[in-house]
Length: 311
Image (tube, rainbow, N blue to C red; front, side, top):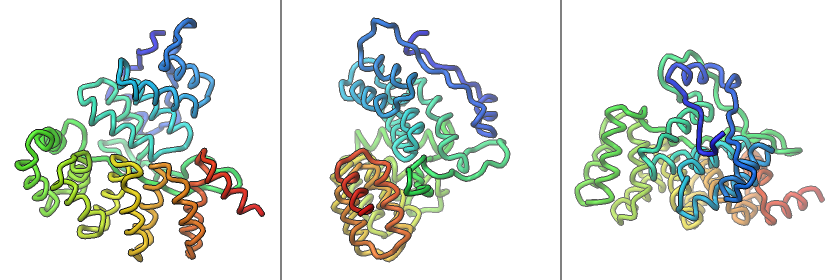
């Protein structure tokens, strides 16, 4: 099988998968034996169910900025989902969509996103239960929901196309795009549209866009948009966002906002900061949330803290 080939998923099949995601067959690429590329290494790792190795290999493809980056992003998201890391899987799908808007791999990530967030699936797919625990965490127990709500309007809808156009305009002429996005956030648009506006703003390096995003992160908009902004800041800024997020964590009394920030630190893989939070957190439910996510991380600080808890 050609290593870049993927299954073709029709609309009818997607609806069926949304109703019964367990029934999906797994069509994994099978590289040639003499193919020594990072992409081939990633696909071999997937076939061996070595998901962490697969993610590392596909990251090499993405960071090299060569061929097959869009395919590598999809298979990275797929592997992250297999590891139980839904937040990063969703974030990777949105990275694919934002950087390779015309890639056919976006359809596969759309299908994957239905499994990741079935409660937000659209169309006549019948009732679908909520997302369950995020993967096995060993003796710590289930992690509970870590939901990165970055689903915007339905792909191809009028709202989606308008926001894609705004995304392009924001990169070319922020002075024209910012008032439009500000109007969306202040207006009566559906929450899905406002969330996607936050997603668009988070990708921009414009000071005005960053100012609006910071307003959302610090609670000057609705709690739902605050959670969205926290997650998007983590996705697009990485650890650079964590000092600001830590200040919000210290100042807020909203447990859901705190959980969103814990999830953001997990997305940025900032284990030392999460360990500090766990040591100082008095709320047992929040502490459990931190510890459960640390248990999923392959980081010395996280592992040392797990050993510390066992003493």
